[in-house]
Image: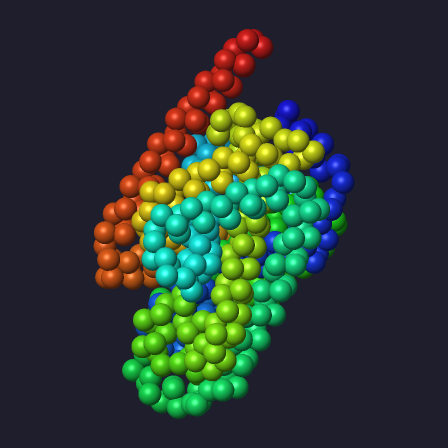
Length: 447
């Protein structure tokens, strides 16, 4: 009860974020380093069908978003994924704690990925581009910058996010349109040369692409700082996903129409920069690099903002260290700082490929659990049973295809991911046991 009263107090404070800022937070969380990596993988697997696969991935994300929107409007709790599950299934505290640990580590892993991608692009034109020590130092520096921005103020973070997100979208769209305009082939020709691509391959790529749409949930974490949640949660989430689908499809079209598939696969995240350089010279490459830096920067800022609110809520309930719940002017300063430190720690440890796979599987898994929660209380959330069932089937299929792909491409990634799950599960179990003892002791004293 005490925790619920505390959250109610937070809601009564000034609301600084409108729909423009909320869309920026969601788009910032989605268009990070993921699309640059996914693009190379997609082209190597399905060639000319990449835009279609990416669009289908967006449809899967939209189905997942439906459950988040319904639950977000109903509960209006910044704990989002964690709180939705805990409130829908109140008799399963360990499961709620487990989801909290999984989701937060997923966010920490994406922060590490975004920061490392930022550092890779920022020094890509220099002779020391392959120096790992410099890469990691710059990654730590960019995390520090946006830690300070998020600690500074909610309104200040919103304005910075607006500027970065909408600027990067213009840059990436402009470059992609120029690449399409200068293309020397057409989609029908590419489809003709890729006639052997199977539907299962397209669906595998669509599932892998889901991680590039991860981030729309961050809107709900800002419920205490937003204006008119009933209207702005659906507007921001659906609007952001539509914008991101458009930008991803345009980017993928620009790549496949202006470059050979081998060139895209070889260059991976640098594919757009390589294509732009060939057509526009150094100016084109620099524009893509600028877009990538803005993309990863806004993703770091938006992810820090949203996920730190969720950390604070979980800490209030006793499943994270208590000091992480402390706030100043509604800003969870300690949660922001600890998340920044842990993400930098992952960068120092390395093995970001395993971290990326963990993030992909985790976010699609918890999205499925949100569908299950919405299914249980669909009458309260006024949800369509048909859409919920379709989302559950689609997300389960997507998770299965990701596991299938990893087993056939590098099974060691699956083993490493399982180890991470085991460690996080142990942490969640220990904290749930401690919290249960506290509750039991409190009940005993009252008796």
